[in-house]
Length: 156
Image (cartoon, rainbow, N blue to C red):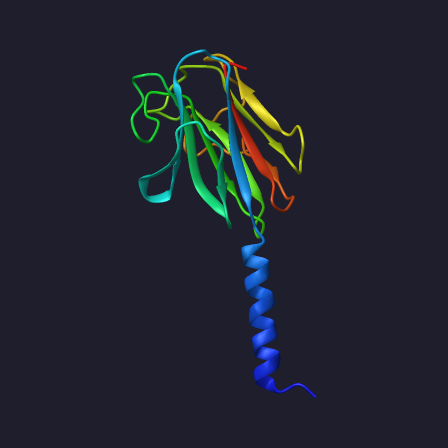
Protein backbone atom coordinates (compact mmCIF):
# COMPACT_ATOMS: atom_id res chain seq x y z
CA UNK A 1 0.00 0.00 0.00
CA UNK A 2 1.10 3.53 -0.70
CA UNK A 3 1.50 5.94 2.13
CA UNK A 4 -0.37 9.27 2.13
CA UNK A 5 2.96 11.04 1.64
CA UNK A 6 3.75 8.97 -1.47
CA UNK A 7 0.30 9.63 -2.92
CA UNK A 8 0.66 13.37 -2.21
CA UNK A 9 4.09 13.46 -3.88
CA UNK A 10 2.82 11.63 -6.97
CA UNK A 11 -0.19 13.99 -7.22
CA UNK A 12 2.06 17.03 -6.88
CA UNK A 13 4.44 15.70 -9.53
CA UNK A 14 1.55 15.05 -11.94
CA UNK A 15 0.18 18.56 -11.40
CA UNK A 16 3.66 20.01 -12.03
CA UNK A 17 4.01 18.01 -15.26
CA UNK A 18 0.59 19.19 -16.48
CA UNK A 19 1.42 22.84 -15.80
CA UNK A 20 4.89 22.52 -17.31
CA UNK A 21 3.40 20.83 -20.36
CA UNK A 22 1.50 23.94 -21.47
CA UNK A 23 3.25 25.90 -24.19
CA UNK A 24 2.22 28.50 -26.77
CA UNK A 25 4.21 30.13 -29.58
CA UNK A 26 3.46 33.49 -31.18
CA UNK A 27 4.98 34.07 -34.62
CA UNK A 28 4.88 37.04 -36.97
CA UNK A 29 4.43 37.46 -40.72
CA UNK A 30 5.37 40.98 -41.79
CA UNK A 31 4.66 41.43 -45.50
CA UNK A 32 4.75 45.24 -45.27
CA UNK A 33 8.45 45.55 -46.08
CA UNK A 34 8.86 48.04 -43.21
CA UNK A 35 8.23 48.31 -39.48
CA UNK A 36 9.05 46.07 -36.54
CA UNK A 37 6.54 43.70 -34.94
CA UNK A 38 6.29 44.24 -31.19
CA UNK A 39 4.85 41.77 -28.68
CA UNK A 40 4.27 42.95 -25.13
CA UNK A 41 3.21 40.91 -22.13
CA UNK A 42 1.57 41.88 -18.88
CA UNK A 43 3.19 44.62 -16.82
CA UNK A 44 4.83 46.19 -19.88
CA UNK A 45 7.35 43.42 -20.53
CA UNK A 46 8.64 43.44 -24.12
CA UNK A 47 8.59 39.78 -25.22
CA UNK A 48 9.60 40.03 -28.88
CA UNK A 49 10.54 42.42 -31.66
CA UNK A 50 9.65 40.02 -34.46
CA UNK A 51 11.22 36.71 -33.51
CA UNK A 52 8.98 33.83 -32.40
CA UNK A 53 8.04 33.95 -28.72
CA UNK A 54 7.27 30.75 -26.81
CA UNK A 55 5.70 30.71 -23.35
CA UNK A 56 6.14 27.75 -21.04
CA UNK A 57 2.68 28.04 -19.55
CA UNK A 58 -0.25 30.38 -20.18
CA UNK A 59 0.43 33.51 -22.23
CA UNK A 60 -2.24 35.91 -21.02
CA UNK A 61 -2.59 39.64 -21.67
CA UNK A 62 -0.52 39.86 -24.87
CA UNK A 63 -0.63 42.87 -27.18
CA UNK A 64 1.06 43.16 -30.58
CA UNK A 65 1.39 45.79 -33.27
CA UNK A 66 3.68 46.82 -36.10
CA UNK A 67 5.88 49.67 -34.89
CA UNK A 68 6.07 52.08 -37.81
CA UNK A 69 6.91 55.19 -35.82
CA UNK A 70 3.83 56.62 -34.13
CA UNK A 71 2.99 53.63 -31.89
CA UNK A 72 3.24 54.00 -28.13
CA UNK A 73 4.33 51.12 -25.89
CA UNK A 74 0.70 50.03 -25.52
CA UNK A 75 0.12 50.27 -29.26
CA UNK A 76 -1.48 53.71 -29.08
CA UNK A 77 -2.05 55.23 -32.52
CA UNK A 78 -1.72 51.82 -34.20
CA UNK A 79 -3.77 48.73 -35.06
CA UNK A 80 -3.62 46.44 -32.01
CA UNK A 81 -3.85 42.64 -31.82
CA UNK A 82 -4.73 41.38 -28.34
CA UNK A 83 -4.45 37.74 -27.23
CA UNK A 84 -4.55 35.40 -24.28
CA UNK A 85 -3.40 31.83 -24.89
CA UNK A 86 -4.42 29.51 -22.10
CA UNK A 87 -5.23 25.80 -21.90
CA UNK A 88 -7.39 26.09 -18.78
CA UNK A 89 -9.87 28.72 -19.95
CA UNK A 90 -9.34 28.62 -23.67
CA UNK A 91 -7.52 31.08 -25.90
CA UNK A 92 -8.88 34.30 -27.30
CA UNK A 93 -7.58 36.91 -29.74
CA UNK A 94 -9.00 40.06 -31.29
CA UNK A 95 -8.18 43.28 -33.10
CA UNK A 96 -8.70 46.58 -31.31
CA UNK A 97 -9.24 50.00 -32.81
CA UNK A 98 -10.56 51.41 -29.53
CA UNK A 99 -9.11 54.93 -29.15
CA UNK A 100 -6.29 55.75 -28.64
CA UNK A 101 -5.69 52.85 -31.08
CA UNK A 102 -6.33 53.50 -34.74
CA UNK A 103 -5.87 51.79 -38.09
CA UNK A 104 -2.33 52.04 -39.46
CA UNK A 105 -1.59 48.84 -41.43
CA UNK A 106 -3.54 45.75 -42.42
CA UNK A 107 -3.29 43.40 -39.43
CA UNK A 108 -4.67 40.00 -38.58
CA UNK A 109 -4.06 36.70 -36.88
CA UNK A 110 -4.82 33.03 -37.12
CA UNK A 111 -4.36 30.04 -34.88
CA UNK A 112 -2.25 27.02 -35.80
CA UNK A 113 -1.48 23.68 -34.16
CA UNK A 114 -5.16 23.67 -33.15
CA UNK A 115 -8.15 25.63 -34.49
CA UNK A 116 -6.17 25.93 -37.73
CA UNK A 117 -7.38 28.74 -39.95
CA UNK A 118 -9.55 30.42 -37.33
CA UNK A 119 -8.72 34.10 -37.05
CA UNK A 120 -9.57 37.45 -38.57
CA UNK A 121 -8.08 40.22 -40.67
CA UNK A 122 -8.44 43.98 -40.58
CA UNK A 123 -7.45 45.28 -44.01
CA UNK A 124 -8.64 48.90 -43.87
CA UNK A 125 -10.08 51.54 -41.56
CA UNK A 126 -13.61 50.17 -42.08
CA UNK A 127 -12.62 46.87 -40.47
CA UNK A 128 -15.95 45.30 -39.42
CA UNK A 129 -14.38 42.68 -37.11
CA UNK A 130 -12.45 45.04 -34.81
CA UNK A 131 -13.41 46.44 -31.43
CA UNK A 132 -14.09 50.18 -31.65
CA UNK A 133 -15.65 50.75 -28.21
CA UNK A 134 -14.79 49.13 -24.85
CA UNK A 135 -18.36 47.89 -24.26
CA UNK A 136 -18.59 45.95 -27.55
CA UNK A 137 -18.68 42.16 -27.52
CA UNK A 138 -18.44 39.37 -30.03
CA UNK A 139 -15.22 40.20 -31.85
CA UNK A 140 -12.98 37.73 -30.01
CA UNK A 141 -11.96 34.63 -31.89
CA UNK A 142 -11.91 31.80 -29.37
CA UNK A 143 -9.96 28.54 -29.56
CA UNK A 144 -10.36 25.74 -27.01
CA UNK A 145 -7.48 23.58 -28.29
CA UNK A 146 -4.66 22.94 -25.81
CA UNK A 147 -1.22 24.39 -26.61
CA UNK A 148 -2.54 26.36 -29.57
CA UNK A 149 -0.15 28.78 -31.30
CA UNK A 150 -0.87 32.14 -32.92
CA UNK A 151 0.48 33.81 -36.06
CA UNK A 152 0.11 37.60 -36.19
CA UNK A 153 0.15 39.06 -39.69
CA UNK A 154 0.85 42.53 -41.08
CA UNK A 155 0.07 43.60 -44.68
CA UNK A 156 -0.97 40.04 -45.50
